[in-house]
Image (cartoon, rainbow, N blue to C red; front, side, top):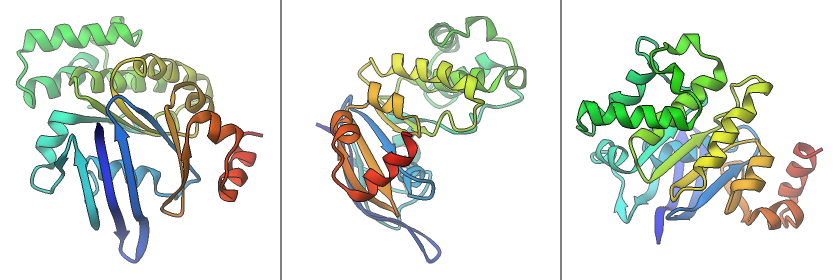
Length: 242
């Protein structure tokens, strides 16, 4: 069953045609990794999927329900969370308050239950001792792990990752990837925009290559990294895998 279905998606920013007739299905529980050069439309694609960006044309279905401008908030609350490049934590709230805000305010989960759940997820990402710390007192890698724990607290079936390691110092990247690898073992539908090819090889059920607003090639990691067919894909991989 398709948890996410994208049909003939187009997105313009003024005269700039960023997404060009994108068609894509993501099965329930599938781990999809999207790669491609900067400016290829990768981040815009996942931002359209949860309606952070409104499509210019085309349709998006989540669990067979059509996304619209009117229902986007309720759909996001029910189905999807997102991990951003820049963490997007509330600086004036502690780590624990960041994790419990959405479950309490948006999902109406009892405060005690939300706190218990948040603490459990902080332990999972190795930050159980940081519950009362403010984000500015954490490293970049720790902040991103908090952001991942926050996405897990809402217990939504879809998590979207928009280049979650791109803002990190190199030595902090692996600690975030390790958490994502563990998360990928669960029955969560994941779409991850990333430049981390090792992560794609290890975790992805399917890899999608985008360039110039189009999906040029997709397949299993084995196909993608050992036998790519599209010449643009081959060129990209030859540069990024050197």
